[in-house]
Length: 192
Image (tube, rainbow, N blue to C red; front, side, top):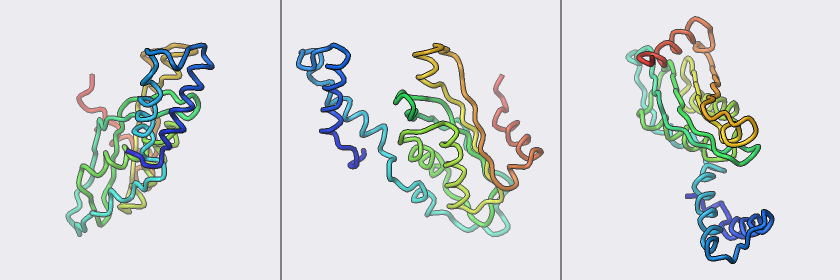
């Protein structure tokens, strides 16, 4: 969990928030709420200031035997929308066409997790994941697809609980429409 999150300040702010909505923060029902929210925020925002490239440092050279494509799909995604500080959840699908190096498959979800653990916009998150993969692995191409349900859409305003936002970020060869379409078909394979 993040040492950067000032838990005491978060807890004090939660006490103030409880007062602002008309609740008594000293009521027994709320006695642990400020500390619980502070711990949750430390987890939610553990990626603030963290470098996602550390997860790609163990990339290995593969020479001519790179393979054509690496796809890690259905990576669980949880972040917090910077507009309302409400969660959004979904899946990330990350594909890259290797250059000279590849990385262990577990590194890709770690990159996603690190970048998602900060106040975010879904569109920016996808771009940041693509940028990290590009910078850390120097692949021929990268494609990131994010599918997420947003608390600000599901729980307030329009209250569309089934709505999913889908965003794409691409680089290099996977930014070309033909290659991108092929990868999108593979990501969507066996989903019907």
